[in-house]
Length: 246
Image 1 (tube, rainbow, N blue to C red):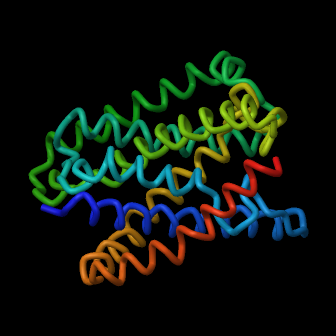
Image 2: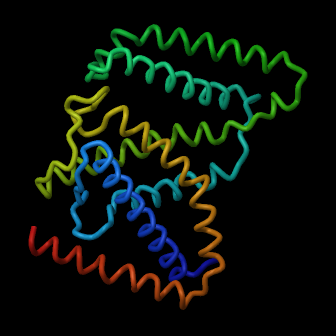
């Protein structure tokens, strides 16, 4: 079992890595879409703490869940995974057909029954096929990644909503405004951002995190300590300057 110091070192390095990845993602988005460089976030340096904290929360909540196998033959797992895929596809299609649906309640009034019917049909057909099939490979299809995708979607949306509220309320900064975006909730979260965070979070946890875990397991404690100092001191100075100046 790891000591408390080792756990802190590992989590702080993970936090910094993803805070930097988040900064790269948001700056790149503005460069591509708006053709201008904007230093995103409340810090001066290339870090967005919300991404670091977000990944740590995801790892804390989902690491054990993702390590287990969840087969489609289980009716509950099948329902969750098929509902996630079907809702994702249908809602994305509706977005490109009618992109000016800003409010969730209006969307549900107009397309809720259609979305429900499509889900019932898909879930019913797939479960019938799986139940009556003699193909063991079909019954053993692992849907863990799809269920993790849904959980990441929900968790990251909550994190973004709470972060927006806190920054808006206590720092008096509107870092993002989704007022005129598809399916936004109180301008704090919207469909596109939540979907992108779910896709990105799933990709990072299944590809980048295993590599980072392998690196941290091989890295000596004194090396981790140096890395923490190199990353931690500039970030601490940055935070202090922000508190003083802003």
